[in-house]
Length: 211
Image (cartoon, rainbow, N blue to C red; front, side, top):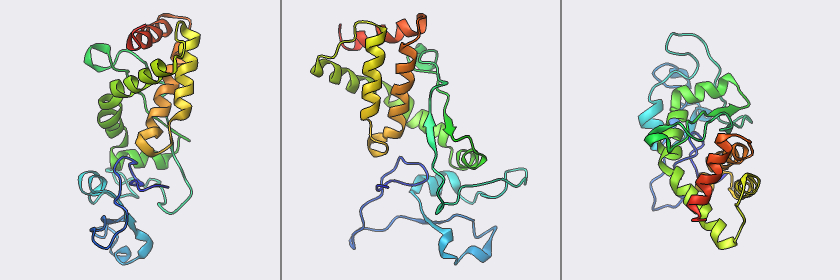
């Protein structure tokens, strides 16, 4: 749903208009490897330029680099992946530990989704292009919501509750909500912990809100 690339969920497609050039239709099974599918309509898939020209190229969707057969997602099928960041650590990543150490898990944990990652560099792109790049900006948006709404964040329980409420407001696709929601869910779960990590999350949020 929505005008987003169905392979990365990052790049937005232009709305159809006669004066706008259409986006690329990729041969999902590369015609250099599977020429019989060159004119097979279900093999033509809308795909953003970066997925098509920078990552997938002529990758073999049905075999890995060692020639071993692998499962891949049927673009017209019903499999839907969701992202979990629950195994991430809110501290210990880059930029002098001011970024989380991201662990990106696909749910359900299927081979089809691992193929998706291998071909389209999903984990790398989500980490570098969105999570690391937007982490502080997303936290600032959250802090403004806290301040404007006069929402209490004086202790770990209140911080966890506020983070969970904000996560529930993130839309699934628009504005990268499919990553923002699990990010704030991870922080909410971390704030619940009665240890140094939970306390550090609370201090982080309170400092952002200048409390």
